[in-house]
Image (tube, rainbow, N blue to C red; front, side, top):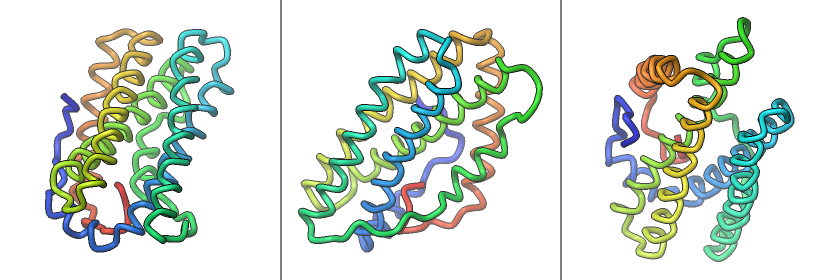
Length: 193
């Protein structure tokens, strides 16, 4: 469904499980950044009524998930650690066009958001299937379902504001670009991406 060109090695779950406090902290920041990204899209494109309508509930959901992950950290006796740069997102942002038409820049922003949601969904799926902690299996299953929905929303919005064929072509380019990023990344137990 997601079309990712390079799947995460399931061994990542074993690595992540050993530093679950780090994964939970990074996950919390991912949710916070997702909410912030959606707010930025609304601020940048207030005239795009459907975008505002579709993304506003995602802001609330992502912020709610941020709070939920913070609660999970607390329940497990972990402290919310310092934020760290997200090298994966930094690399993805290099795909975004800086000049040209506003329509193309918006499409890239929406597709980058979709890609982040797709990769998160894939990682949450792995955790929901393979982590040994039964509570975290359920916890991450909920996130997997949510991220799949967000991924779809961002793709659909891109098609709303740009021709579907153009979106499809650009998405394929982004999938290739993202696969190269993933190919050159080490599996880390302290990051969601």
